[in-house]
Image (cartoon, rainbow, N blue to C red; front, side, top):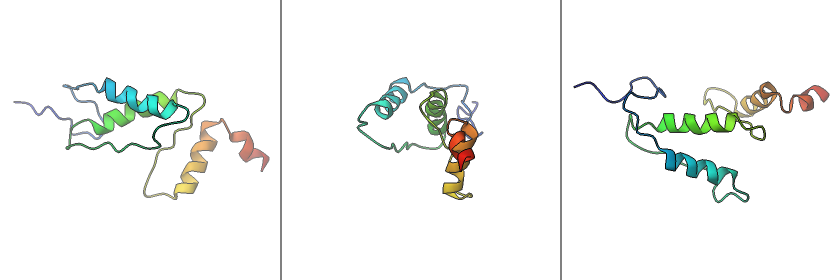
Length: 99
């Protein structure tokens, strides 16, 4: 029997069980004003598509004009990473260029 889990980090597996309800709930909570939560902890066993769910949510917010998504990287300076992401996104590039 073939392994149903993807061994590639964040790659959607062949037998993907969509988490539409959970994904929509997280998105809804983040866009609500006021938001009932400021963060989510996505837990589960290895191969249970946590990263795929998170990537789908990230893709949704990447497409929104009023959101800036910052990819975290523990090997970089968090403030430099945030500033770089804001600059690269272009929405607030003018603020950097004025200073």
